[in-house]
Image: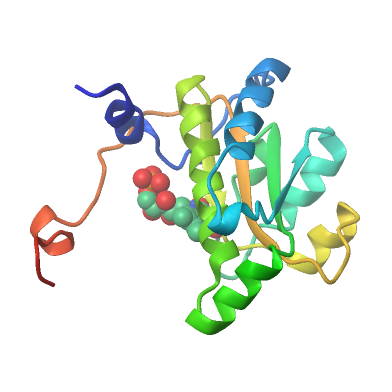
Length: 180
Ligand SMILES: Cc1cc2nc3c(=O)[nH]c(=O)nc-3n(C[C@H](O)[C@H](O)[C@H](O)COP(=O)(O)O)c2cc1C
């Protein structure tokens, strides 16, 4: 089977981590895979803030937790958190986005995020993308200027759980050939 497809199949949102530290070399590989991601007009509208300081990371993790809807309680277990900050894209991307009514930077960071998660998987690490967090709190904690949006948060660490079966729509629901 294709090695890439194997990686794609085994990557999952890991919500349980062991307390084993993540090696710096692995983090660097993960960040390089993010840096090399494609983006509209090659704008690279991102900054990856890597949170490894234990006390700070705990505070950032807590800012992803919602007790009301019971989301992201697991985040403090992850030894590393990457916060993706949206940077202004090139002028040509801004104009193109306005004309075409498209948020290209959101697409771009989604691709970079998947690069991160796939590289993490290849390195034996687990990851989970988090779209729910207290943006203002994380901005303050990480000294992110308040006018810059946080696009996504990713937890990283050695997973401490089993692989789950993928739950996905059937091919015929999501793929069509030559017409909608
Ligand atoms: C943009 C985005 C935001 C997400 N936000 C959260 C989140 O806040 N908390 C969480 O536990 N999982 C979150 N997820 C993970 C999804 O729930 C998960 O990818 C989906 O259920 C498919 O499962 P899998 O990743 O294990 O294959 C998010 C995923 C994406 C792509």
